Amino acid sequence: MSPLVLEKPVFTKDQVVSATEASKSLSAIRKRAKRAPQFIADHNDIDTVIIDYAAYEEMYGALQYLHELEINRIAADRVKHGPHEFVPFEDALTTEELAEFESMDPEAIPDEDLFE
Image 1 (cartoon, rainbow, N blue to C red):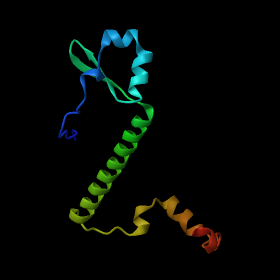
Image 2 (image 1 turned 90 degrees about the vertical axis):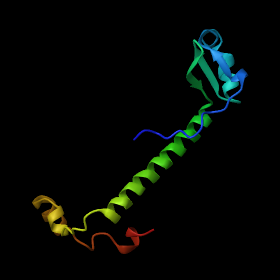
Image 3 (image 1 turned 30 degrees about the vertical axis):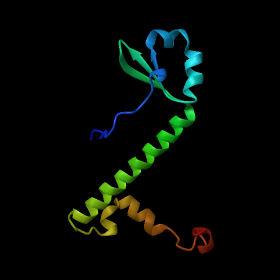
Image 4 (image 1 turned 60 degrees about the horizontal axis):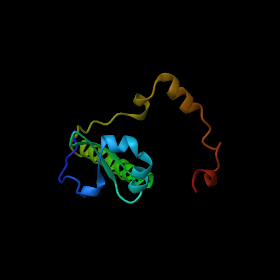
């Protein structure tokens, strides 16, 4: 699934840096990137963005959250619209897994330890 881009990012002229300038003054560009993203242009085409790490972490977290929401939406849609065929618990396990499950002592863990 390709991402849907509704708007292009808005930035000012002072945020655009040529690739040549970026290679010569990376330290200064990194400092400016702490205040606002810096867009590196190669032959007038922006191909790289330098951002503050805290901003990157925030974007990464938001992307992960949206990814989880999408997975949950897909799963809920499959449950809602998928075939409603029930599979017995025993059929979902291999013979070895079922034997291991049946050999477990249900009293091995006290109820207090099961729930926090």
